[in-house]
Length: 561
Image (tube, rainbow, N blue to C red; front, side):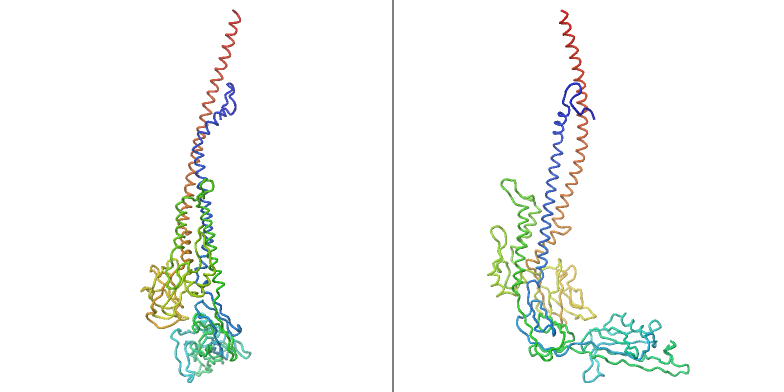
């Protein structure tokens, strides 16, 4: 590529000259490299910010759950009799509980089959669910919350095993099994739900009449003998286990429930009955767990301080200019800081006695960090323990005690919403009703606010009660819940952090293309310089030769004089 060393004939230092000239030509390339390095530093800084925000959100997400603050212990004196848990809303104290009977499912058996392949007649087997009158077995009241089951028996399922499979395939409120008792096979039906109200009534029994005379040759088609007589034995179901309610006594009050899991006897407490107590009172102790609540609040303070330290490091100003943060003056970084600070410095819109962090001893220091005053926190817990949860978590206050908070989404807005219930949920049917005047999505246990409405995603548990208007619910978001939502927005794929990072990467791509273009131009410039200086070197070399010749000639002339 032309001369690459000192001039061949002139002694001209071409390399040094070209290097000097190219140093000037490369200044735009250097500027681009410096700009790219600055962008890369910002991307790295945003990576650090994103990581810190993610860690902070993990803590906020946990603390946005009311269970982290409505902390109570539910202690059974004998966990072999019952265990208990609380959602944090129970009244502290001791409860005397006696368990005299556990809830059981009804079991019915149909006997008299030699083999599970024995055939039965075509027809229908009907199963209704409800309650028998304890004084008259002929009186049966259907359970309105349970759908009846009707099984068609035909050539596809006319065996004992076929009937069992058909019942189970219906996925209804009954299961079927076949038990060999040593002398034959019996079809056993078990109600999937315990309690007297879930007893079974079987009709169409004659449709399962078993023709013993034809079972061995497999010809039982239900038509009887050829002369028109019938050899079938009409077999009926017998009860092998009666449906029973759980019977217990709570502080002198007799209680009967269909299930061994009881959620509506002591407000806020779930009892899981395991065995009877033989007439003995078993103590249940409910108490507040202040230590765990203090730990939750302490984790909130620590998480904020760690995030604050990172953000300050990235955006700090140093008067010497040597230690300023990479994101100093960056508009996006400033927006992140401002959005977080706006949540931390405002009062929470609750109906409780606590609305600010300062009221529980969490205050800002001069350096911008949070500090926790344990003495003030203890005093706040002693006087307003029930309100601490609403200060941090998403929570709900309902005018109806049988409506409780089950969850929310990022679309749920704070507010007060009217609730109506037109149908209560059952094991086989969803709840129906409205939230905020709009038809809600129903589930077995409650309602969820409709998409597009202010109550969108607000899930309510409906434990029972009357149909119609059920008052109002007020949904509020505490500090942790609001911060969780803010950070989720900041870190989303369409959030400002992702947008800023994408913009920086786009700028780097543009600079890479500019660098490539500059390098192509510089290669051309250097090639031109080398061509020019090669010609100059040749010219100077020729002139040097001519100069030497003339010098010699002049010297010769002078010598001849």
